[in-house]
Length: 159
Image (tube, rainbow, N blue to C red; front, side, top):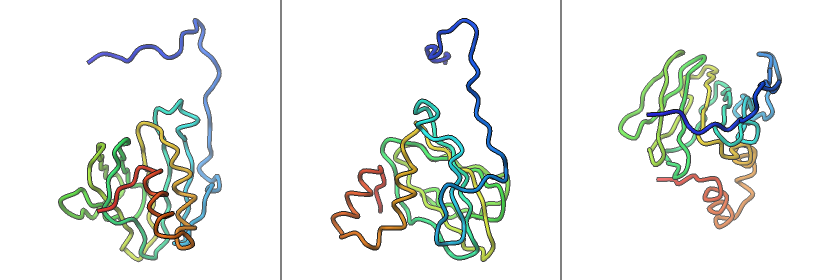
C-alpha cells in the first residue's frame, strides 16, 4: 500500500485549518431532542470525508436497516448507549466503541436506552449528507414517489 498522489503541490504549506469549540450549537436540531453538528462536511474536506456529531435525545430514534452504494459509514460512540445493527445482529454499544460499515454493508442504529446518547458519524468519501439530514424532518409531507426519490438521491436503500 502506498500513499495517494499529492493533492497539495505548494512548497511552503498554507494556513487552512478549521476549529470548532465543543460548545458550538448544532447546525440542525431534530425532533428526538438531539441535534447534528456538521464538524467536517464533504464540501470542506475536498469530498474526502464527512464527519458529524449526532446527538440523540432520550426518545426512541434511529433509521431502520439500510445500505449505501457509494459511501462507507463509521460510528464512534461518545456518550450513552446506541444499538447498532451490523447486518447480522444488534450490538449494544458504549462510549469508545467503533463500528465501520463499508459500501453495501447493511446497518442501522437507534437509541433505545431512554437516555441521551451521542456519536460521531464518518462518511467516506464526503457525500453531501447535510441535505439528507435536513430533509428527514419533511418526509411526512412527501408523496411515496417523492420519498423514494429523496432516498435514492441520498444513496439510501432500505431493506
